[in-house]
Length: 383
Image (cartoon, rainbow, N blue to C red):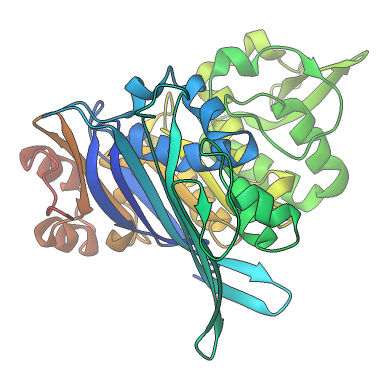
């Protein structure tokens, strides 16, 4: 299967919520597999924090999460700073460039600010031992001026014309944790190429697909038919200036409105619309992250869901969280996509799938789920 060049190559996180330290390598499709409460969502939120902090400010991103105390690791002892570092590729007029960006945020010991940027760095490797970079330490730009200590420098550098590809690439990582109650709500009928975090705008996204990308709207409908028996497709329905969704079925009756659509059907449509949203097809999105895409789906539908995930990963990097090993029991599944997430002593550990389980996956044995449970999802320590 031909896959897109991944955006993220490697991510390192320290002292973020339940994560003391982890280093995760990325492939075009990444599956974070682990039980509920292991910390999968905390790793996803660390990635989302980067996008949020660049779109607004670090202080705003922290406030959205309940304050710095809710982010800093607390066990086995409290910490006063956290770090996120990313290695990735950005598209420039000269081609793809290997890039690194990261920062360390922490408490302000003076108490005058909600937080401070203790360190920030960015480097774009230009080839032939050339690079473009900046480094910020305690509000001082190395070989430059200064910046407010609670602000990130990357948005400033991007506004000045430098590092703009890095800035927008990181901001275009899109995150989704679908909520069917939210998806049933009426939304504005204004066209948008993006599904919201909770599934907002699914109706307008389906309408935009039908208008601009009818071939891919047909793909969404085809996958929905494979996942939901009797379904023919889901469409936008406009009432004045408001928009919602309706389900077409093979019963030849009036389409079902949002309140009559089952949770599993709405979840499936939301995942499919997210994977093929216009922001992906337009080449704007650099990464699509979806939490628990298999929620409320019948196990028999997992195969079609896997096919949709792998097809979408040919266009954009995909990362999902899941508690189900059913996704792994598929002919085309590659064990190298899996990162197993466990909790040990209140700390999240993220590692590659162990060799015994890898062998089972490679041999495509139906007993994988039982084996994973017997091993209690214990990965090799990646630290």
